[in-house]
Image 1 (cartoon, one colour):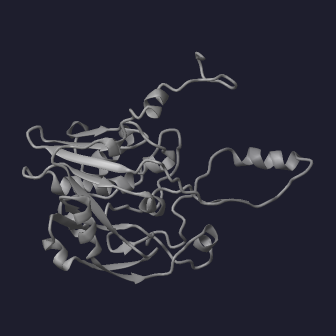
Image 2 (tube, rainbow, N blue to C red):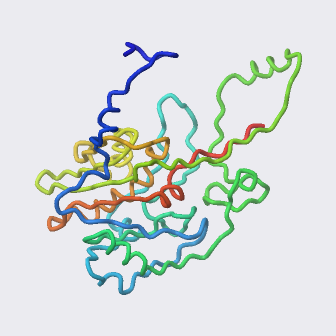
Image 3 (tube, rainbow, N blue to C red):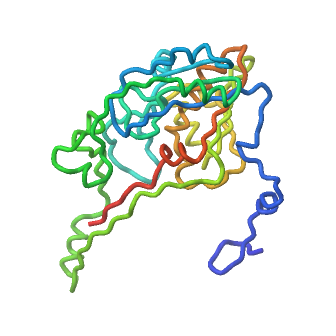
Length: 306
């Protein structure tokens, strides 16, 4: 085995033997005693005004333990995720676009979560979620960059009527202009990197619980790193001290940027906050199959190079 990573050097991964012999430990492999299950109700529209979410008889269906919407989130004092600066990327603060765990007043993409059902089994949670009646007044959608920045576009966020939330400039403009002025030839072309969505082999699962004696939350997630999640949950969402939340990540089956999506995971932690904090309730589990992962996970953004 090579001592260091490098071109043309074969390097064996330490985890391969476990994986190929079926000894991996992914979040969906973990089962917790007394766990219950969560299933989300999602928007069928890419953009619209969320009027009501009515569950009717779903609340008394067999096995249903709890149903929550953004109203419950707000009443519990659970906040949205705001812009979180990343070290090494200095930039101005963008326009405020608070991302709520469950849609508040408006939906902005197909698959956005508008409510969560918690039940004794996954099938019971799905059946109850299917009973939800979601009233949404559709609005025009923006599907690509050209539409987003066209004159008088359909605004997605109220504080960004032109759909521009951040203009990021770096480098020395005068030096760049001087380099072009000295160039013997200048080529201009338009390139477009289309949007890409990862479809990982492992479902994105979260298991959340609460230790009443210790006054501490715990969560098992498949992620690219727990510190980013911990920061968002402590500073913005639950507003707790870091030692009050314990996050665990075991093996991860495919990641890309979608494993780093704190906004989507916040809804699963909110499920924990609202349900499992009660002494009589056990840990709660949420899992996604391929369809909701593709529709609602973080995509690689469309990039237009001019």
